[in-house]
Amino acid sequence: MMCFIRNSKFLLNRWCLSLLWAGVIFSVCSQLDAETGWFSFQNGGTNTNSKALKIEQTVELKTKWEVELEGYGQSSPVVWDKAIYTTSVIGDNKEKCIVAAYDLTSGKKSWSLEFKNPGPRESSVYVSKAAPTPVVDENGVVALFEGGLLVSCTHDGKVSWQRDLLGEFGELASNHGLSSSLEQTQDAVFVWVERSESPYILSVDKKSGKDNWKSSGVGSTSWSTPRLLQVGDSQQLLLSGSGRIIGLDPATGKKLWDFDGISGNTVPTPMPLRNGEFLMGATTGRGDGGDGNPAASNGVIKVSLVDQQWSADYLWHCEKATSSFGSPVEMNGVAYFVNRAGVLFAVDSSKGNEVYSQRLASSMWATPVKLGNALILPCKNGTIQIIAQGNQYSLLGETKLWENGATEGQRGSFGGPVLYAVILVEDRIIARRGDRLFNIQIK
Image (cartoon, rainbow, N blue to C red; front, side, top):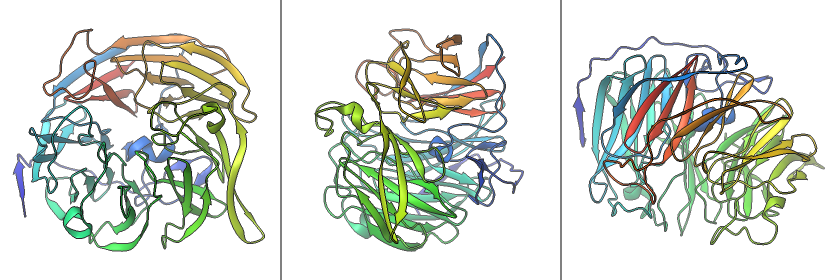
């Protein structure tokens, strides 16, 4: 087993509670409690925390600590209890993969594990670097790396199991690398490898690491993430790739429906809205299939069962709003989209009518996070803005995590450091740039 542990003194208080999502109680990760952490990419599509503060007229943001990370990564952190988990890669060819744990209160590293990358590749600005976000539950954390490493670790830094997907299923050929994050249920983790030939998705048993099933992927370019959607009394697993979205039965991997009336949907991930409905973002630009009227691919899609056949189609389309690397989110009847130029569009989530638009501090690579009655906007240049939710734009507070001209230990993108993700844990924002982690208190 190619693994090295550094400092494993780390304790966990186990929890077994329930996650409230869109008014529907469903079992995810042994009844995860949204009050105690952030468990996956976009927190399973909620992109909020149930214990979020209620914001008054203004808000103060104060950085409590910042720490330098080992290597570089583009994934979002995840949190269980008082532990923050991160992934990163090290080396000119990403030879080493790192899973690390940090104390939420102090930022002190609790432990880190180092693994050999099964599929090293030159580390350049054109390919992903530890982009897939891991998942966490009461038993530990499961992480995926673009070189084919899939590994499960306990909360005290011991390896439960690990796999080499490259060795099992062949080369993970993709022009810009793999960035699809993991999705999870109580017992399974979903691993999507949308490569140039024979793309696939796996359902993997969390305890054993063995496959429950393996199905074909979308068959088109994608850096999106699998997303569970409540449809009626059950769930479906959505996969979004350029020009297509498909729905699978998460229990069997069987394809239920296939929708091709979309373009530009290579990066944004479907965001659950109401039962059977999801917000869909799409972008514009070279190679993303978003020619024509890109706004028409941004909107709400509904999954329906008609004459015992599943299908999906738009309920409404945006007029002007488009997306970038992040996904749209919805709060209290208003959906928010941020385009490549950093313009925020607020849209009526029932009809698609534009409510307002506003230019932000910069473009965004992350997805807005819902904060009680407000919205956290994590701008690419390190500025975090908090705005009031509603039909009018109102800036409540902002902070800048680094100054213009700052550099990273390992350059990860054109134009300097990038704020890749923010997550919310009670009154703290945890922010991730490629080489650093920040803890910002909301007052």
